[in-house]
Amino acid sequence: QVQLIESGGGLVQAGGSLRLSCAASGRTFSSNAMGWFRQAPGKEREFVTATRWSAGSTDYADSVKGRFTISRDNAKNTVYLQMNNLKPEDTAIYYCAAARGFYYSRSPASFGFWGQGIQVTVSS
Image (cartoon, rainbow, N blue to C red; front, side, top):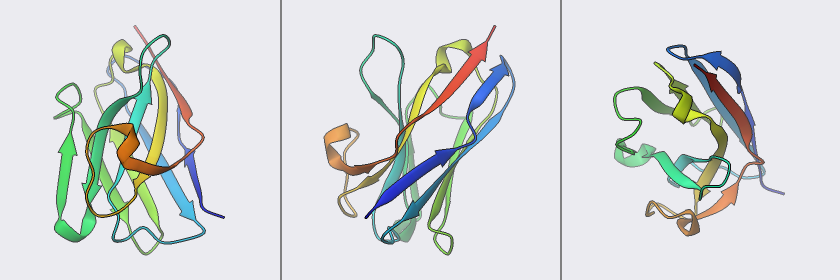
């Protein structure tokens, strides 16, 4: 059974930092794109970032570029999201996701495996 389990969320003041982790079990995703999405109340799930480790590539939404960093440790089958200079508009449930393969689009439909989500709240 494939599982993606997020950790590291919580409440932080604006300007602060959080690091999310996503541990995968049940299979390895070293050849798959992996990423993070988020969903704020009343809004659609939106792309945050993704990485294709084998290609050494990363991709960020404009809203987080320069503040968020995605990384992965294939030996641990884990992907991370370092979030710095957090803003109240970053408040959302954050989801870890693994794409169905190496290629992906920024649409949630491109990702076939999902974590349960973790809350990130940024206070002003």
